[in-house]
Length: 253
Image 1 (cartoon, rainbow, N blue to C red):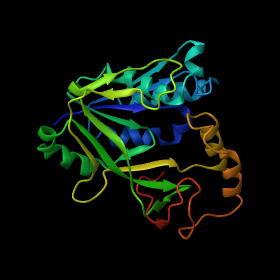
Image 2 (cartoon, helix red, strand yellow):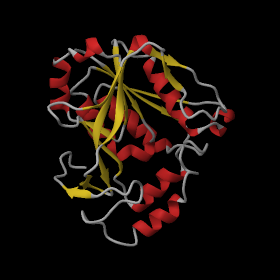
Image 3 (cartoon, rainbow, N blue to C red):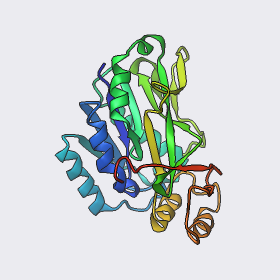
């Protein structure tokens, strides 16, 4: 079965872009990378990295779209930016099923292609949410606790209801009548690897000061404390308090 993929992107995640494109290209021929010209806090995006990102997408034959909005957009709730990014990519997709990814979510292409061939589940459900591995600081530290993050939708159940300056946590809705399957795996293995917290100190600070959750905690203080020491598989992360295994760096990040 063929699917479309919309990749939510900002240049804070440039380090993941090429591997995400490379692996996603193995599962789809309809991929849109969608971005904005400013971060969540209204500060300007890295123009040079946006140009490099567009060039990289062109090399892979993938469409790169970068959008701008009025100043009101940047005072709204942070999640709305994600929803608008997904909406802008969604309207360009051509297949009946659309997978939404953040660029730091890397697909296991072999498992996913096998999953797509076994298409019985697509006749039973309208919304699929996949289980994923979760990593911290280095791509060799994988949490013993999996999360669920990437979602795939049948287009027939997707409705966007987005209002600027809204404080709603969810601005991306499905039609009332739909069937969903969560924590989805294939052959009892997660199909995705989430590297969102695999960063150097400066990269991590840039992430938390320009994203939609920036006011949730004193992130900078937590990061300063975190990087005052080395991290090993015997430690716990400050985000979720997970414990870890040390694994192979499978994507050479």
